[in-house]
Image (cartoon, rainbow, N blue to C red; front, top):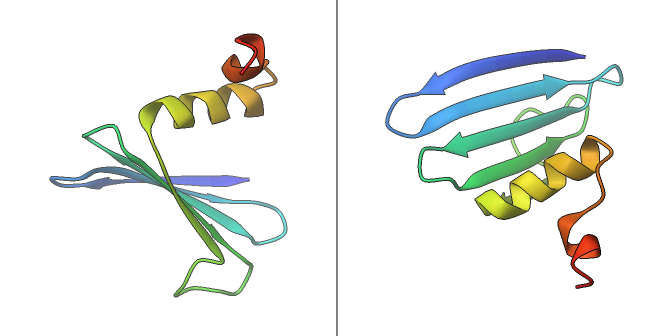
Length: 78
C-alpha cells in the first residue's frame, strides 16, 4: 500500500492511498471538518467510481470500523 499526502492551500489535506490491485482511495480532509472520500478503479484517472461526502462524525466512525472498533451507532443501539 502506498500513501501520498498533499497540502491543499486554503482547503486542507489530500491523501491518496493506492492498494496492491492498483485501485485508489482519495480522501480530502477540509479544514472545516468535511471529508470527501473517492474510489478510483485501477486505470481510471479522471472520474471516481464512487464519491461520498462525510461529516467529521461519520469519518471518525468509519475510521473506527476500519480499525476494528465497534461502531458507535451499534453501541448506542441506533
